[in-house]
Structures are given as structure tokens and as C-alpha cells.
Length: 329
Image 1: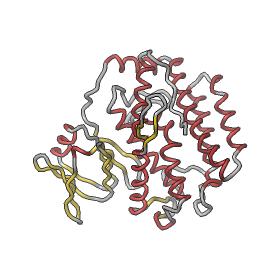
Image 2: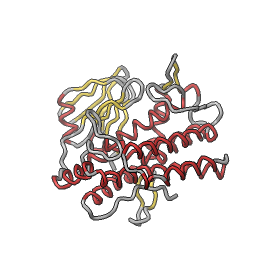
Image 3: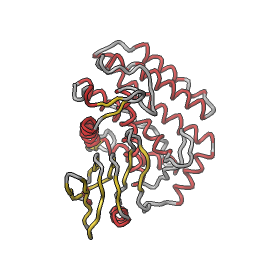
Image 4: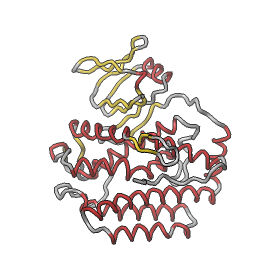
């Protein structure tokens, strides 16, 4: 099975014939290209056109992250799974407001119900979160009456605000969250959320690349220049499972400490050691398997994202109504 490959240090990617290797002050490390699913470059990296050409031939995308750990860009191999029919249908569902609303609302419902699944667990085992749970349920219940994308996005924002409000009662007291801050993240929990969301965004993009979907045509988030907005749509559904559960485990089990972050006047970031700890847990979570209720076999969490893409394609083609992924365990 091909795996993600994370480069956290500064260096140079070089190619010699059919070998790609990473060079920095610590020496040279050969990359097992045939076993790599995607490369995540979290350090400053230079490379030649020969490296890009070879990785593209092997179907390996490279995702780049900046100093703050935010997703910056991707080197996306030439698409091979193209379908004019799917592209036309995808654009048609964006242009038709009624069809777009069906998908936008379902993304928010799936996201909200997965947030509720997390809160229900901690409400039973740690803190009474009944008020917040009911508030989120009330917001989701109003989706049917919303007729504009902006109204659906408002519901989504309300879900996340209520959900994040619970973090200080779920996480250790030394990791105070208070409120969501993004660019830059102002405290440790915000740093973890931003880093995890960037990893998820690029992970979803890799899965979209392996299907016939176009990553620039979305339904909940507005398509715009310089971003793969369909990744944002699908990532909403998986944040509670992949990002938030990773953070809860790392902090509640003491796997990350205050010393794994670095702070300045107005921002807080994971240091190199903290990133490596997060990436190990992130990769373990992506590779975790669960028995799929419909397929009757075990699939990895990463595979669940690909299956979500396939479900969306079936909806676009009129074969099966899209129901967003819900955590069932």
C-alpha cells in the first residue's frame, strides 16, 4: 500500500535517473517513490523540473505548506481520470441553485452530525454538553427553510462556533482555546486546528485527484481563483473525525506539551518536534481501519474520503442521492 511521505526539514529534492532523493545538512535520503501516495513538504524545499516530471509520471502530488503550517499550493500531476460527462454535470449542479443547495445543505448536515457525535461522547464521559448539543441540533433543523447559500453558510458558522465553544471543557485546562483564530493562530489549540485543517485539505485534494471530479467546482464554498474549493466542501464532513479527534487524543493523553509550541507576540505554532508528533498521529489515524457497513469489509479512514468522492459522482450522474458521511462508531 502506498503511503503519505512527510518532509519537515529544509532541503533539496534531486533526481538521478529513476531515483529521487532528499538532500539537506544531515545527508541524503532516498525516497521510495513507488510506495509514495503523496508528498507533504512542510519545510523550505527546492527541486528541479526532472524531479517534478518523474513524480508526475508516477502520479504523486506534492503539497506545500508555509512557515505557519498553512497549505500553500500543490504540484498536481496531469489528470488521467477525466470525464466530460462528470465535469458537465458538476458544473450544472453548481449553476442550478436548487441542485447546489441540496449538496450544500447535506455537507453542513454531515459536518454538524459528526460534531454532535464527538460532543455526545464527551457529554457522557466528561462534561454535560446538553445545552450546546441542543443548540447545534436546532441550527441544523433550520436548514430546510434556507434558500440562499449565504444562509446555509451562516448555519455552518453557527455549528462551528457552538462546537468550538465546548473545547475548553473537553481539553486540559492548560490548553485554553477561548475562540477560533486563524491567520495567524493565537494559541496552541488554534495552531493545532489550523495545522490539521491544512493537512486534511491537501489529503482530500489527493483523493479528488484520483477520481473524475474537478476540484475547483464546489457547492457549499464559493469557487474562486487559486483554490481547490471542492476540497473545502468535503473537508467539512471529515474535520470532526480526522482533525478534532487527533487533537483530543494528543492533548488529553499528554502526547503534546506546552514545550512543543513556539509563540511570538501575536501567533503560536507547533515547533518541529510538535509537527512530527502530530504527523505520526495523523498518519496513524488515516491508516486506521473500520468495517464498512455497506461494503462489508474493512476500509481505512483515508479510503472513506475516496468513497465520499464516489458517492458525490453518483449523485451528479443521477444514480444515487448523496448522503454525507456520518460517523457510525
